[in-house]
Structure formats: structure tokens, C-alpha cells
Length: 270
Image (cartoon, rainbow, N blue to C red; front, side, top):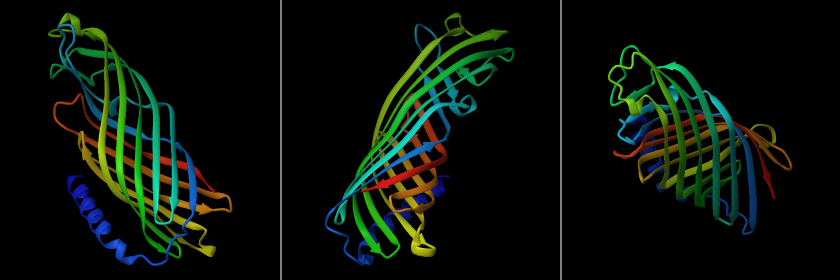
């Protein structure tokens, strides 16, 4: 994975440096707008540490082992262009939760006694938002490429209710049942590229793509989107796969998080 991230970062830098020289036609010097609404169905993985509280121990939870139920997800984007310059806003909101019985996925103070299991009730709400400026570096028949620079915020609230059962052994009394929460907001600067390649009869079919990398309050973050779409007079319909990954700096309660899954949407232009 690290090798792939480094390769992707190197490719991104190369593209950002060379594509301005490849620009062809001049885009229209007038405002153009687009808004996209998606249905998003992500798998979520990550790891969270719940700090000691009230004399209790430190809990660690692998999010991917417990999360199955997506209560609600929304993904939308808005773009505006005037000539080569533009702005992009993108947001994902998720409400996810799950209850699990007889689990050994919750770790307290680095371990769990062999005869103990936990009943867990986990809930996570949060959103990922991107705000960036864009520069249309390549304009060709059937092909567009924008350079992107801006910021992304990750805002997550996690709540865990638990009860240990069985041979509790070395688990201290304050840790055998309870509730803990973790709230965090994370800002990162990002750079990337986005665009589309059209093909087929009348160039109605197209491949949209997006790639960015960033860092700041996180150690490293990257995001990629790719798919296929079809253009109508009023706008586009498209299906895509979106992958967003965070590697956090040491000492943070949220150590890592990944969102990955399919999205189906409609883009309206005016």
C-alpha cells in the first residue's frame, strides 16, 4: 500500500508540472455551474483508541470488525467555472452503527482475558468536506483536466457502549461496562487533478476521474475516484468508486480511517 501511495504521489506531481504545456483550446469566459447528488455505499475501516476515564483502562477498537449497518449516507458536489478558473465543494455525510454480541474485538489495556467477551453498541456520525480552487490545464475535444488545490476536513464522532461478560479475570471493575466517546476534527491541505475523458457515439459516454494527496493535521491522506457516465442534454448520470484514506499522526485517538465503496449519481449543469 505504501509503495502504491508513493507511486500515486509521484504521478500526481508529474501531471501537475507538465499538463499546462499540453493545453489546447481556451475555455469560455463565462460562468458555468454543476451540482451532483450521489447515493454512496461505503465500507469503513479504521482504528480508534478510547482514552482512560474514571480510573479505567485504555480501549482500542478495530472499526471494520464491527461496522455493518449504514443508517444514512449522503454525498454531493458543486462546481463553478469561469474561463480556466473555478471552485469545487464536495461533502460526504455518514451515520453508521452496529450492535455486536459475544465479541472479542474490543481490547482493554492491550488484551482481553481468554474467557471474556463483550456486548458492543457502536455509533459513528461524521462528514468529510473538501473546498478547493481549480485551474483548467487541458481543454481538448472530449478531454478535460483540472489541477486542484485546497483543503479537506474530517469531522467524526464515535460513541461506544460496552459490557464485558464471562471470565472477567483481570479486567478492572470500572472497565467491565460503560460508555465512551471520541470527537475529532482534522484539517489537511490537498493538491490533485480531476477531469473526464469522453468516447463513443457523440462522445456521450465518459470516464470521470479524481486524485488528490494531502497532509496537515493528519500524517497523510489521499483520495481517488473513478467511474463511467453518460451525458444527456440536462446533465449526466454516472457510477463511480470512491476511496478516501487517512493515516493519522501518533498520539491521536483516531489512528486511521478508510472509506471505500460505490456511488451512483446525477449531475445537473446550467
